[in-house]
Image 1: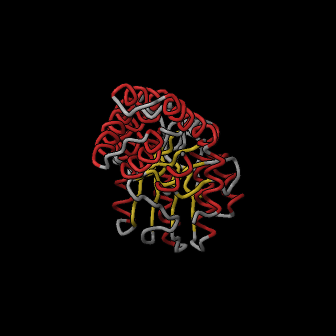
Image 2: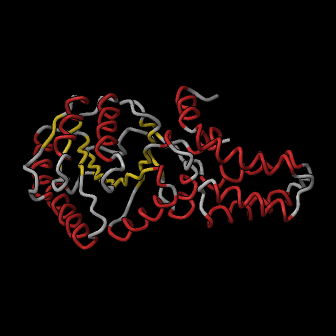
Image 3: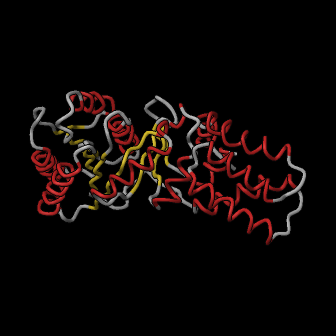
Length: 303
């Protein structure tokens, strides 16, 4: 039923699964009857597992309804029931690597240190392997190593890159990248853009300038803005996403470092609180370890 992706996901989610599944099992193993005390303890177990207060409360509310509806009396049925509740909350989301339509421009944003440049490199590799022509734009011109780092990834992925000097105008880089994309019949242009959240006004100005350039020069291109978040920061990732949403619309999320954290439950929070689809997840260091997100497989692997 599940493929190679599922095995990798299951392995990558070991720490999160140990955290959530164990916490829930510990509560259920001691329970004799399904009552308010049990629900309270389950809620606490979810909150501790970094699913977040708001989302944990909602899971338990829905669980109560489901147990009542299905007239469940056996404690052993609570866990599979909870799994179904979470699957329903997540929706049947399955992302694909192929662009919705070409030409496409992906703007990738995220604060420094979340794995933004690495994710772009891995994304470029995956898209190129699907036989699309990919071009990278190094428009994160303020972080010292960002341009060099992206260039290393462009060589690894064997895709071209458009870059300027450090400190140059990001919108000018995008302008040149758009001209190159049109001239070379590129299918997907992936732009590494800035991630300085502490200065929202600057970031907002910069992104609107970039979008104006794209509107004017390449209005026919399909556009997508992806936000990169670090799973190891747990609920802080949700806060970060909310802050970015104030600056620009976000179409999807790339969640990195899921394999290194027990806080992978944050995926459920992101979907529930922000209603932004998680499109890709990072479950390892390798070039192939950025995976398309499948919500049902994610919950199955979690439990």
